[in-house]
Length: 372
Ligand SMILES: [Zn+2]
Picture 1 (tube, rainbow, N blue to C red):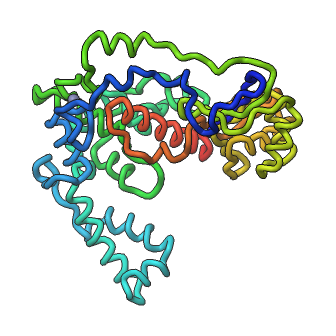
Picture 2 (picture 1 turned 180 degrees about the vertical axis):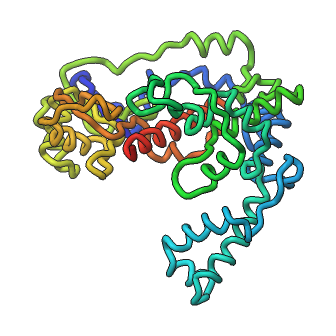
Picture 3 (picture 1 turned 30 degrees about the horizontal axis):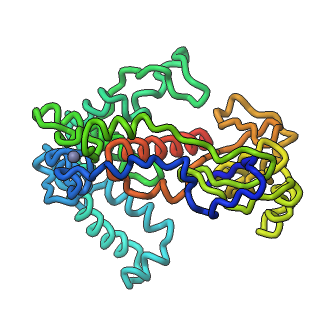
C-alpha cells in the first residue's frame, strides 16, 4: 500500500486503519446494485455480452467450428512444440504428475489435456474477423506497432507512434497468445472483440438499465448529492502521522509530536533506520511497491532502494519510469501505487475491467522494455 506522512492536530486520535470520515461519501448508501445485471458474472454488461465473455473464457459450451476454426489436435506441430517446451522446463514435475518415466509420454498426455482446454474457449480459435476487430481497436501492438523499416519513427521502447498497417494472420496471433511467455491477449483484447461482436449483431454491450455502471440511484437528486459531495482532509496541525493512501485513506500509525518519535516508532515496527528516516524527512510519500534490482520493495522499505539509486543518473533511453522519491533522481523499474492483490482481483464492472487490463498491459510493456 502507498504510505504518506500527514501533519495533523495535537492529539489527533482517529482510529487506526479506519477510513477517515471526510473521505467517505455518505451518499454512497443511496446507491443500489443494478437489479438487472448485478446477478450476472460481469456487472454492467448486457446478457449478450456476458454470454460472449463466457464463450471467450470457456465458461459456456463453445465449438471451434462455430467461429470458423478447426479443433486443435495433440498431433498438431504447434501444439507439440509448445507442450514440449512446457514439459521440458520442469521435466521431473511432469513425469511425476503423469506417473511415467518417459518425457514423450508426458508430452502426449499434456497435449491431450491442453487440447481439451484450448478447444473449449473462443480465445484459442480466433476468426479472420476477430483479427480485424482487434487491429481496428488498436490492439495487438506486438504486430501492428513494430517498425517495418528503419526510417519509421519509434518511441524509445521500440513501438511505432502510429500503427504500421500490418495485419497479422490468425496463426501469428494464436502462436503469440498460446506460446510460452507472459505475452498474449488479455482482458483488453477480449473487451475489444466482444464490443465489436455486439456492434455487428446489433446487441447492446452494456446493461441497458444502468448503462454499464452496475449501479442505480434512488433518484436523480440522490445521484447529484453523491456527485457534488467533496472530501475534507483531517484537521491540519504540527503532529506527524503515517497514512495509507490506497483505500480512501486511513491513519496507520499513532500521531506523534515530533518527526523523531515517528521515525523511532517505524524502526520499532521493523523498518530499517535509513528507510524510516528517508520516508519521514523527505517528501513523506512511499509507493505501494517498487520493483528494482530484481527485488520487490514494499511501501516504506522502497525508500531503501531510493537511497541506493541516489548516485545514479536516470537513463532516458530505457523508457523506465523515473521517480523522485527521496529528493534525488531515482530510476525504478516499476513504481506502483496500488496493493498487489488488486491486480489479480476480478473486477466486476466495465470500468474496473478496462482499468485492470490497462494495468496488466502496462506491466507487460515494462517487462518487454527490459527484455529489449
Ligand atoms: Zn445493470
